[in-house]
Structure formats: C-alpha cells, structure tokens
Length: 87
Image 1 (cartoon, rainbow, N blue to C red):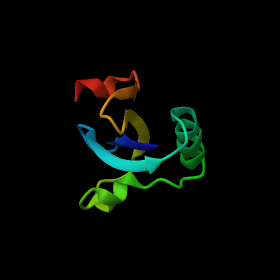
Image 2: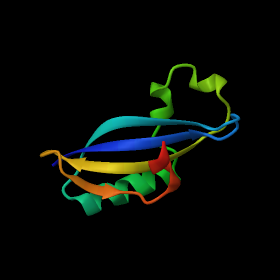
Image 3: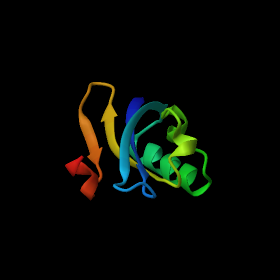
C-alpha cells in the first residue's frame, strides 16, 4: 500500500521556533508496518525530511516527527496529538 507521511520538522533553536511540514510517500503492507518502519528509522536517523527545506543547515538544531499519515484513498489514518496542530 502507498501512504503519504507528513513530517513535522521543528527548528527549535530559532526564536520563535520554525515549523515545517514535509510530505513523503512510503510503501508498506499495513499502517502498523509503516509506523514500525518510521519508528525504527527515527531511532536510526534514516529519515531526512529536513533535506527538503531550503537552507535547513542554516536554521540550527531540529527535531522531526511523523505527524500525519494518509492512505492512498486520501483518508487520514493517523494524526499525532501534539501542539503542532496550532501551526
């Protein structure tokens, strides 16, 4: 199955912090498999959505989280419940 993951990239050293949302497509057998893969990739620093942000290297330190997952039909199947919803 194809999923679209929206990454939340938070450059927390900026004042105020800068927040970006970056979409990336993934293939997985199920949403559970996808989440397992995303979690393992975050632990191993495999995912680099910050590379898609212009001049990211100049913005300082950052955190990344997967924030939203949408299936191939466009249905939202996961949304992280964190303050980024305000941005």
